[in-house]
Length: 423
Image (cartoon, rainbow, N blue to C red):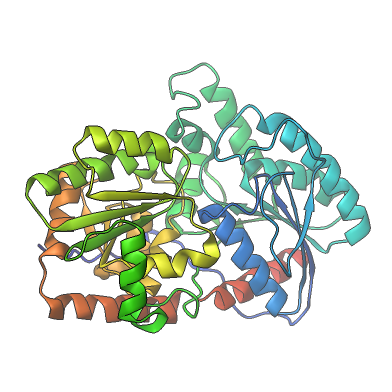
């Protein structure tokens, strides 16, 4: 097995996408974040909103988050929700027609909060947030920063909400391009995201800044720093993980575009090879569907589905793993789970995408995108690797998380962008 080296600074021929600067003027801002989603809901996009907000607060800024009526509150974070709808208590993940009225109500709430809060910056997440934020920013005469977390239309295709050959794809693509151009600056979580803006939407790169996803390495830590062997053994037993098996962990949303189906196919291949491995699949939605699918594939006794894991408990559950897997198929979205994996010192297999290479660099084990057999082979490589190699992997991955992916550094980069758009 050869671990390939990726060039992380130049992703396309002749186009260098720099990360944002970290030098700031020292000014503090009141930031109104608009999050058209059921914040907080224990998955990647929400973790970025949450951790960015905390980092900005630690640097002395005021932060208020406007979001949907559903979702979980977080101590110490000012969250303002839209009008509650008695018949709608569902956590919204991905594309949905229900988001139309949710966005309308969020617009009214954000307008009211902006009049009370008197923000200096509108920081919008997702394309609906950027559209709402544009009108508020012009009404208030303040800058709009758009936190671009992937292509809107590509996400709709990934979620099977539309097809690329459908009649509405063209108009939606035009709308997406229009929304991209409304902001005073666009933030991407990866250099690949900046390349998507440049290549697919011909967006001017002088308005694009890359602020990579981060991880709290004091929160996500290796097993040896979180629990003793007795506690780990007890938690494994409570989850039905047999003794003597190596544990492959996955923590994230469950969906075809996240590669959940491919992960189960790879697990089935490894079980047929009689590998002593157990797959701990943590996340939602659709865990009942995937549990039944796993049973049909002969994986009963070899996979545990936990359902949704609260973010505050995630480090302990990840610490049960010997290796981690990130089979995400989408190439336009971020992949923040990789950062949690490396902070926990978990050797990781991922499909070979530009975003995965940005995060893992030459420390990732990369499978051919969409190929379950390749994924199984790479998981097998780590399952059978000698202890010395795994120990080296773990230490180098942990060091990468600590040295390169701090949320406090991300907060300083955000403030430098705020300075730029405010001048």
